[in-house]
Length: 162
Ligand code: FES
Ligand code: FES
Image (cartoon, rainbow, N blue to C red; front, side):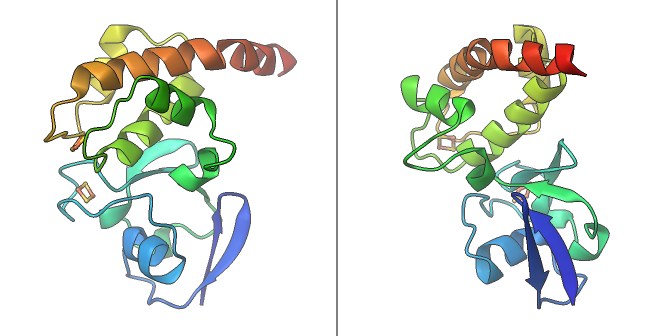
């Protein structure tokens, strides 16, 4: 049995070790934020964070993830208490169908954790692997900028503490 750390909790996984993380999240653990788009690492809909880095969960077998820290969109906040990235996407009404949005948020979160003062250029470059068929790109960019503003003080504090 594989044991994974997801959103701060240790979870025992029954699926075979070569099962992609996306199927385990959705089918076994009921964590449905990450979406199945292409299943081939080409659309970004399934993106989660592993050790703080954006990863396509559709092509990442769980056997590679023991002892690593996995964060899904559910780990960024709840419906009752959304996190800064989620609040920013709501405020900017960045979703149309919403299918691409969880993946976009996870990669944007990984970027801002790494580079709190990310420029527009780097936000655009970072989100390149993500497809949005609805074309809400400009709202998505505004949402990430808003999230960056909102997260700045906390991140700056965290950096000085290190
Ligand atoms: S579903 Fe994983 S990249 Fe498209
Ligand atoms: S909002 Fe529909 S795919 Fe992006």
